[in-house]
Image 1 (cartoon, rainbow, N blue to C red):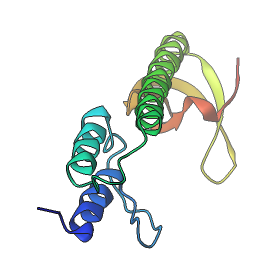
Image 2 (cartoon, rainbow, N blue to C red):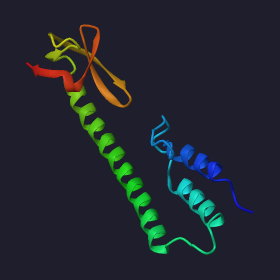
Image 3 (tube, rainbow, N blue to C red):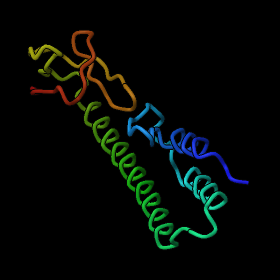
Image 4 (cartoon, one colour):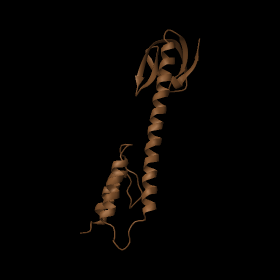
Length: 142
């Protein structure tokens, strides 16, 4: 009737991206452990618990609340990033035709006219002298 502990740990390792036995982290998508995954782990834990030593319900509720908090923070962070990209995009479009100074990857300054705007993962890049520069590399404008 019981489930092998290695099988349970394997499922938890896969869902969380963490090796629970060694403490190492694996590369997994950022949304790998969501409320649905948590509920699956929770139900597996309930099905396989020792009937003489049941789980503490307040611990279960706290764990679920923590998962919900993490999801809310993740959503808020993504929303904030989307807002920042939108504001930067509006500002970048206002710079079209403007002479700007940007910093290249080597730390050198490059001056030129913004020819166009490109986007990388939703974030605008200024095209100066046929080279894309992130908005964060903008040094000055004239």
